[in-house]
Length: 236
Image (cartoon, rainbow, N blue to C red; front, side):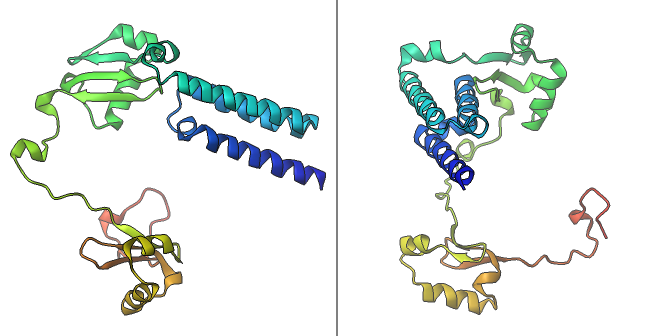
């Protein structure tokens, strides 16, 4: 029973500390973010081996406070460039920067692979590619090769509408109903009109035109349509 109690305390403490220190610590992590998560996980897991829950949790809280202080300091312009590593240029104006590749210890074939993932097959079309502090490669194409934007053609585009989920995994999202000032009775009627039940619906969203889009759990038969092919031996 004591082991279970300790396990719950350690788990909840770790969860709360990560929540308190913010989303940045669990997003695309920089070097210090990675260090923080690594140290924190080792500290909160140590009581499982040495049975020193209070001491380990105290250390965990201290580490979390230090991390918060570091993040605050990084908001100041003068300290930001000291605390965080600068981006490394890998391609400039279509030319591969060998010094940049050497600095980040990346072979050319890996660079080309990462560029293909981002949709760039030819380096000569790239104005600048840099490796950010988080390890992600950001790419800016040359102006003549960038995708055409509506503004380039003087087109007026209506504001983007985000479909609002009202049912997810068979459960009604009541706070979204309240936000839209809709009643549960209206939602149930719409679901029944479609011949469905709430429990069978994977996702139902409120659309811009005021209608309800329903995605149920049923998989439509594709009858060997080549467009539905998936690799492997499970195709029938």
